[in-house]
Image (cartoon, rainbow, N blue to C red; front, side):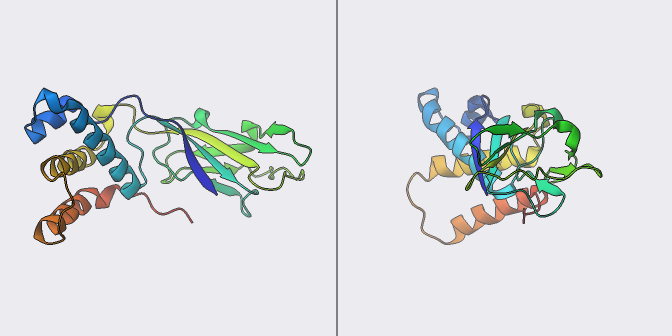
Length: 194
């Protein structure tokens, strides 16, 4: 199973202006501050399994799940209608699994796709290797809907990196940074995908 980003967010949950104010930087450092903000958002997303900005993902699998559910490993789901399931047959052709065959549970964390009672995964012979693809949109509707704890963790990390541009010796400071970020994000973590 692999997950790739198809489209990245066009807007960050914490603006450069907000980050610059937080780090007390100058406009001359906007590019640097912006890169710290993007890296901090990515770190928060990796730590929580939660997507902050509107992102399209593609999950690729070698075969159908053994059960009736297929888990989408990034939350929150933006729209159940954004989920598309395709599969490649041994003949080389591509088919689409009808959206009438499954229900999308976007309230679950992580979201999941569940076959309806009278449905089964297609029994056609799949192409060897990555042949089942699920594409979906994840992320919050806008900056105002991103949890404040996540935005504060971004500010905190970007500020720490701005002030400490070189490698930090492990000790009190880096331990405090790790603890603070962990404390901010622990309740936002999406349960691991099996």
